[in-house]
Image (cartoon, rainbow, N blue to C red; front, top):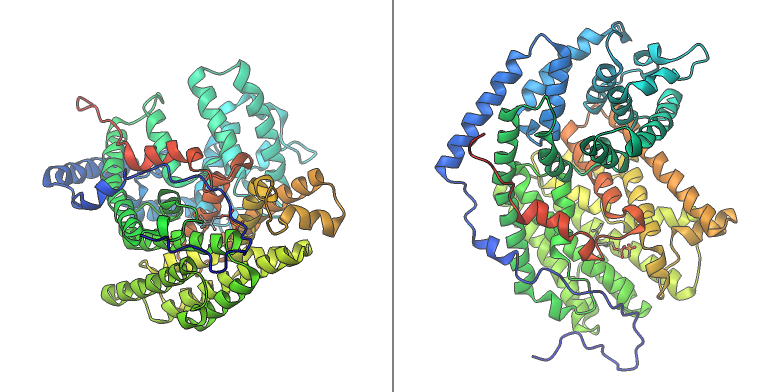
Length: 561
Ligand SMILES: CC(C)=CCC/C(C)=C/COP(=O)(O)OP(=O)(O)O
């Protein structure tokens, strides 16, 4: 068959990029036909083990420290979603015991205990004063006591707790520097290889910034080596991981089938072929079974966003893209009749996806129809932001950093992804959708964080070809900085956005916690995807092992345990 993608006039110079092909072949196709339902025997086992875990939870009712450690393990092992009500009630009770008239009244306990209590309560949205809870660890100058450096477990917990810091929490800023440098110095000399490995991992990715499913996969592998581990919890976590993984396999199988049937790799040959990598984003937003539809749809949506991005960045001319953007605004393919077939394929894929989303929400009765209008408008806004970048690029214009960030937050595609995921799930209602659509501070912070992290990871690769000036050049221009200074400036901005996000999570008590968690998970997957100046989306070999661990290999379960 003749390729659909041949450019219309032969002499057009296109910004084609030599993206590497997909590394997955047909690996995920087999899962499309795999039965979604787990068998009766497995269901009975899940139910029995879950009840055993519940009994242990209930029996720890009077010991706060034990309860907090138990909740922490449930969360880290990825099974807390089975016990949401119990955990909420327990934390509410613990919060009541800790505070009276908003003052913290009980500050007894070890540094580990207080830091864990602080972290779990704050994660749940309780605004606990860091100054008050850590008061007894300060000296008379108001700084942290040097002698806490002897308490490794305490420092470790304080390091994790301090990640939830907001602005003007000097004690937590200090705690983060203090614990990081002391813990880092322990790795080489004083710890067992097992602990040193754990510590390295948490210094690289603290719990608060980790992608939940990856954290769980990693923690299940090491939890059994902790002296105080519970076999009941571990077995249930493994069984649950494998059961839920089957559902994830089914989802990625069906997205892969759709992608292959649509022949995007042939029909849009200039674009990245990244189905499994795209699915990583909705999987990071939530792995829970009840968000299966949202994951499937958003997985497809991210692949369409990727086709669109490459159409603007790696194929279209400014004249073509102007027309394409107009077609997106009018939602009308007739506007682009004169453009190359491949661009029409991209346009149609977006229109058809929106139709599919609409059918799904009507069938499931989960969402109001304002949702689909918002999705379409966000797709247009995304295309418009890409067009702005294309124009800047063709004109050789370097915008100011602020101008670049305002546009770049939209072109991160996060507002669209977040809106779509939440609109397809159980918390979808007009109020929440309006809130997201109007770009609240938390979405702004996450999108800007995404744009900056992406830019500093792919800066060198992108500047090797004709590409819009990135945040780095814009920052150099606006503040008259060297490249190195701009990198450092942007890294500080990224840290600052974390404080903004943490702060918003405390303020937004009218938004359900799971919704805030989905949103925060986007920041977490950003940190992971773009760490160490690498772009794991564009270079799939960097993501391969993680995808295998989450989507291909089950966890082995020794039956004797
Ligand atoms: C966040 C995800 C996975 C979105 C979908 C695909 C996409 C646009 C990835 C970023 O690519 P890029 O680094 O080339 O983006 P940009 O061109 O916006 O810098």
